[in-house]
Structures are given as C-alpha cells and as structure tokens.
Length: 340
Image (cartoon, rainbow, N blue to C red):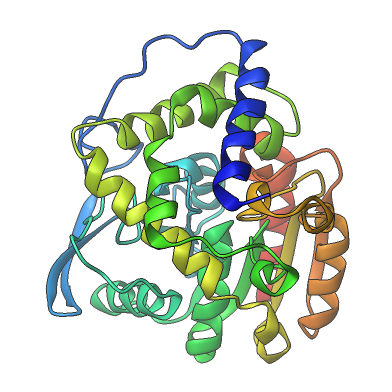
C-alpha cells in the first residue's frame, strides 16, 4: 500500500470513529500567534535574532506563591500543547516555592511563526538558553513533555552544567521511527496533514491517545486552543511551521544519545500512551511494533544512567493533565529529593 493510500485509509477509519463521537460546538478561532486565547498568567516577550530573522519567544514567568526555595523550573510543552497546558503543574510548583518559566517555542502557540526556518532541536535549545540567559537564570530544573521531552533531552546534552535535574514526561522519540520502518514523508505531505486538522479529529485523537479513552469537559479547552490556532486567520503559516516541525521530529532522533545524558533524570510515563509519529502510514507489521510505552519506558530507564522511573498505569500521553494530583505529588517529591 502506498503512503497516500495509507493516509486515505486512516482518514476513512477516523471518519468511522468520529461518527460515534458527539459533535462539538462551533470552535472559536484565534490569530497566528494565538491572539484571543487567554493564558493563566501574563505573557512576556523575548525578542532575539535566529538564522538572520527577528523572532519573539513568548513565555510565562510565574513567581513562587509561598516562600521561595531558590529553584527555577523550566517547562517545555509538546507539539500539540502550549505553555498554558502546564497550568496545573505550574500552580503546584509555585505553591511549593518554585519559580516557573514556561515558554512557547518558536513556531508554536503565541511565539513567532517564521516564513522560513531550519527547525532543529539544537536551535530550539539555543533559543531557550538565550531566553534564560536574558533573565539571569542558569541552573534549572528542566521538565519536558512529549516533543518537549525530545527538546529537553537535547538541552541537557548541550548544557549539562545548567541542568540540576531533567524530567521527561511521556517524551516522544523513545524509539527511532525511521529506523524501525516508518516511511518518510515529504515536507509538503507533512504540511498537507496539518492542513487537514479539525476540532473533531483533534478530540478523537486526544481521547484515544492522551487520555486513554477518557474524556472530561476540562479537556475541551485544549481542543479549542489547538483547533482555533490551526483553523484561524493564520492557518497557512501555522500549518507550514507545524509541517516543518513534524519533519524535525521524524528526522532528528535523540534516543541513541540517551546513554550520554549525565544529569539526574526522572522519567514520568503514562503507560497507556501509544504515540508514534507516522505510525498511521507505516505498514501493519511496523505499526504493530511502535508506541509500546511500558517497554519503551524500561528501555529508556536502562539507557539513561542513574535515572528514576515513575509510571502511571492508567494514564495516556498527558498524565499531568489526566491525573494532575498524582502527577504533581510525584513530581514535587522527586524534585525535593533531588535537592537534598
């Protein structure tokens, strides 16, 4: 079966799934930098140059809500997430004396969507490092989720002296999909897939993958955020950047470098996650081997020397949203133990 036929087949299957899903109310739309969608804290600007272009990285800088403990947590979002999706975790961190910095990476959410950009995890890490330098912050607790986990791993490899602890929350890239047989897609094909995004498709995918089949009304806000961005006035530039980011994720694995990580590392894994980029266009025999997070978690745990693994057996790709109390309790305990 060819890639285009596979994509069509997935679309038919998704349509059947959606036939049993209640229709969503009309989704609001937002501007290309997520204008119109409110974040829980003030959004600040970091203006800088990258690849000869003027960029603005937007971020939240949340002060401790109690006596400061002197530590700063930096939270990196995933591809279908934004800084705002860390809200509950940021509140828990602030309540325990942590300062929290949550940026939107270039190409995502409220930050610049460049017309042309050579996306790489090292470029995004450099951008984030420059932001922290501008704030006078060096030593950090680095927390990365999903694609943000791949970025956090790259950051820890590039700036090991700056990372007091690395926390990887259901990071994607625990396996090298290309090496395992997921066929390559062109950038144009990635962009076409992004253009086909709808609120209904987002909800169906998130319900099955992020929340292990569950759905709660609180999740609708994040569907509206993503769908409103991808279907808003900047839909073309948003889809272009998202497609380039897809290509970065597929072509720049970090899993082979896990043994090189030399900072204290915590893996926090929802075991019912099945995420694997491009799995839907892979041959059936390849697809069957991908996205087995309980096994991937153990392999990553063994590869990252001295790491700790915490599993959430009933959670999917986003345990910090699906099981926030359990997740935050475990995170705060682990951060406290690392500081002793």
